[in-house]
Length: 272
Image (cartoon, rainbow, N blue to C red; front, top):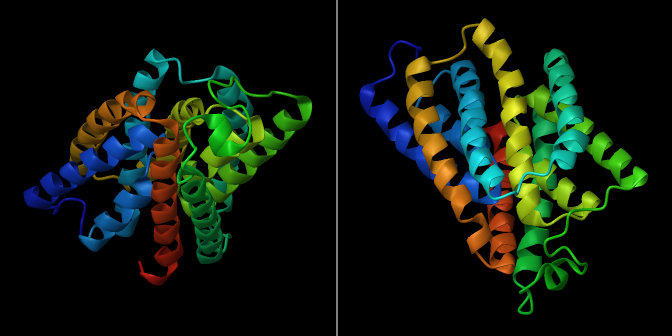
């Protein structure tokens, strides 16, 4: 579908989809562009236009969701620095390597990783005694501010750089991989990790969008509609992050991650 021929009905439909994806994404701390993109492709949107539009919608949704997390003190500046800066550098470099990267293999690898992590979170969240972070993760993460030792900072920075490289190569923000890395390596409360991850996603999305905008691979009618509804949904969703029991939050997060992993896995087989 050409950038100038997207029908009004499709724009409205995608606006509604973006709202509900934003609602879920704001809650679990993910941009969830991996869910929006396949729907856009199924509706016949040109793949390059869909990717360029979707990545900025992800960024805008992340921003407004981050505002709510910031208000509730769920964005940790140390996490943003330790994970966010290397991730942005990785995404920038990955964009330059995208033409040489084996995209399908990278997507399958990312999908397997996210599926495994989602399954692990589902099992953790299903524990009957999981009323606190200590119960769920086997360590004291309830309201934890994290452990920022030299070793953990180094591991987290390397993880951010690697995830950024992978995401930049395949054109995805990949917050679904970044979020578990923040929780496990830095041993921080998952709700703070969710808010910090969404904040980082805003900057990564902006960097990824610049190239698409330069190449005129953006549908601004779709961007305006999906961006606005996605931002509203993300802002509302983020309001509920701290109001759900921790085991239920981890369980929901696991289900979302597992679905995102499946979408990544099947992407190489759906065609352009």
